[in-house]
Image (cartoon, rainbow, N blue to C red; front, side, top):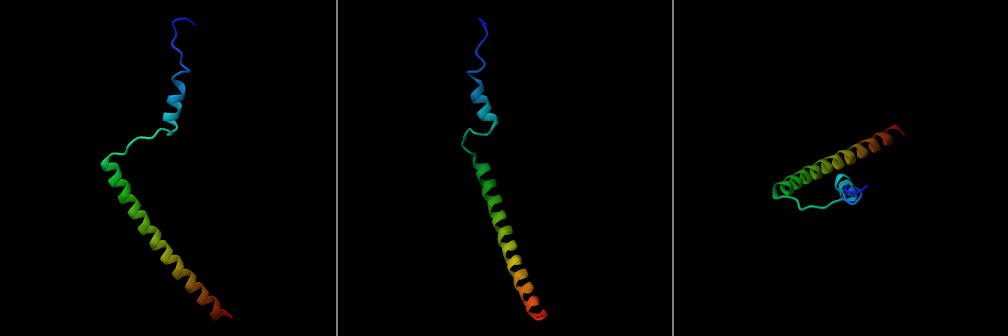
Length: 67
């Protein structure tokens, strides 16, 4: 149609932006928050690994006692 701007020319950019495919620089507060969150998650993983190790050791010892 004459006089109608081509919609398809702008559509791929909009789709990639909505899909999260575009990259942007993080702000300093975002980086600080992400680093803090990563540190907290690492701590949780470490605690869970220790707990898992203790549970495995205790279940192994319990298994030996039954035999």
